[in-house]
Amino acid sequence: MRGLVNAYGSFGTYYELGPLHEYPASTIAWIGSIQAYLMLFTGALTGPLFDAGHFRLLLIVGSSLIVLGMATTSVSTKLWQIMLSQAFAIGIGQGCLFSPSLAVLSTYFSEKRFLIAMGLAAAGSGLAAYHIEGGTIYPIVFHTLEPKLGFAATTRVIAYIAAGTLLISNMVIRVRTLSTQRRQIFDMAAWKEPAFTVYVIGSMIAFLGTWTPFVYIEVYALKYGITSKQLAFYLLPIITAGSIFGRVGPNLIAARIGLFNVVIPCVTITGVLAFCFIVAKTQESLIAVSCLYGFFSGSIVSIIPALGVSISPSRAVIGTRIGMACATIGLGMLAGTPVSGAILSHHGFTATWAFSGTVALLGACFLTAARVLHGGWILRQKL
Image (cartoon, rainbow, N blue to C red; front, side, top):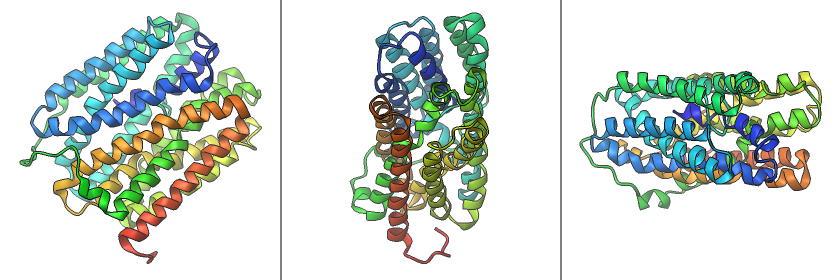
């Protein structure tokens, strides 16, 4: 599901060097950004449908749109065609699965174990991967088969893999319990709470720059000849392999010391590592920074949504607030890579990495403020 947003970096590199080379990087980046945003925005809208008992319908529609989107991408040659198939069809399909999948997890696990379960689920998406932030298996499949089979056949192979894995999901996933309360889509009272509002703003800012390395790392390595062409195409799987561990390890620690106490240092380190890409001019240093960046940025994916749970006053409004938060935070994902692409086109990679690092550090500042508003200045307090 979310795994298919994760390999877009590989497709983006192919588009920039191939069929869409006449378009600037900022324009091409909208494909992955729209896909990622629609996953979160549509997910916020499908939550009430899940509560109404339509999980099976959402699962079938979402799975079908994802496979159909990949299949039509294989025959797309123009920007508008790729936009419709890869951005809109897949993005909406993933949105049909996103919130319901999280909700299903919550019916099987206690609040403490749910955090660990969500980390494992996020790690699984990083392993299979096809989203703005990267991927491990699908990018390797793409770069291994594309030179031999061509783009169309390779994309259809990925569609077959997605169809197989989604078929298994359709067969085995069951809902244990359904909420007796019908969930609202919007809760105005949430925005009157300073901690919630600042948390959402900080998360949106952090997401604005976090995915830049996932999308442009391959182009960076190729442009400056830092690695061979073959190794450059493995940098994206390397980053996402690091994020797999980052989506699980910090969650285990957060279950003990608190979500804010883990995610704030991780977002801060992510920002610092983005600046490190500026000086990573050797093969060894680039691989090392990529691994570390993947690990610490991975925690953002799994922990930031869970923060919406921890600062909600009651479980009755959790679904609504997570939906609102994801739809708003997704604006950072929507604008982030196109902005990075525009900076790259006009000012080069140094400015691009600096932008990524700066907004991540700014996001960490807002998250720190949200922690203080929620629980005060006591550092040892579990928050």
